[in-house]
Amino acid sequence: MNAAGFRRLLQQAGLLSRQQRSLLIEFLRPALGLDQVCEAIDGVRPAPLCCPGCSGTRHYRHGIVRGLQRYRCRACGRTFSALTATPLARLRHRAKWIDYLRDMLNSRSVRAAAKRIGVHRNTSFRWRHRFLDGARLDQPDRLAGIAEADEMFILESQKGSRCLDRPARKRGGSAHSRGISHEHDCILVARDRSGQTCCCVTGRAAVTARQLHRHLLPVLDPDVLLVTDGHVAYRTFAREAGIAHAYVNLRAGERMRGAVHVQNVNAYHQRLRSWLSRFHGVASRYLPNYLGWRWALDEGRITEPEHLLRAAIGIFHIQR
Image 1: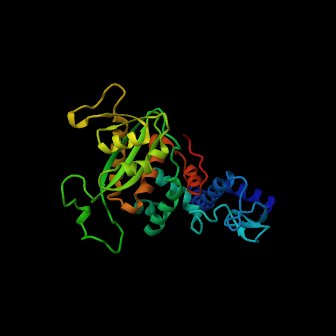
Image 2: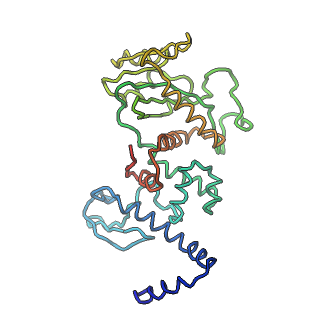
Image 3: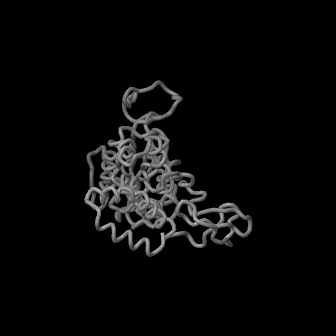
């Protein structure tokens, strides 16, 4: 539409009734959503933008595809955009992404989000884990000062699997034996006093010193003071790694000894468990995605859908 025609259209917009204005806004909503998505992706890109085929940096603009700038590599001739070779490649209905991400920030269930934005529940589930695929990798590089570490356990789940390696449990069920066993997923949470948190799934049953070397050691500063409970695996790990270690004897009723306590990490456990309960069971294979999701939401680190969108494609601009 030329400029003169657009001005005439704007003049006529003032003559619309309230119902007509509402219909016009609903009609324009998908286009506005697509514009928001494209601005969030194209507005902040890694520099330089590389060809996903040959990693070349020499390219030129080659048209626009569904609102996103397309490029052609001068070396291999391949065309690509900012979404090529990312978890969001080939996903459709981009105009609804912002509304869906807003539902994710509100921790809505798969079915509730699907019903609200008008997509199939399978699409909603696929989007959830595509958007979380990159966000789950955004964790602190180092925990410094005083770092608390403790583990929590949830019952292993094969929710959504077509082939189970055990008899099905009705409505989640319960473990066959008392206490911690190989029927439980172990979630290790390490958190320093500044609020930086690292979460991971170490495996089944109680944590071992070998698993602590693999998951905990890379994120600890060499001068950190590690505070845990009296589990022997932590003492063995700290002695072998040469890390300063203090612990509280919870079995003897000791909860705090000056600055030595694990109350911060246990409070995070409580928030995490309460938040997971709204999803009525989380499949074990998707548990790392939910840990990254909860860490992104904790303490308001992500407040806008655009932040989560950029994290999903590997452009981390989350407020720390």
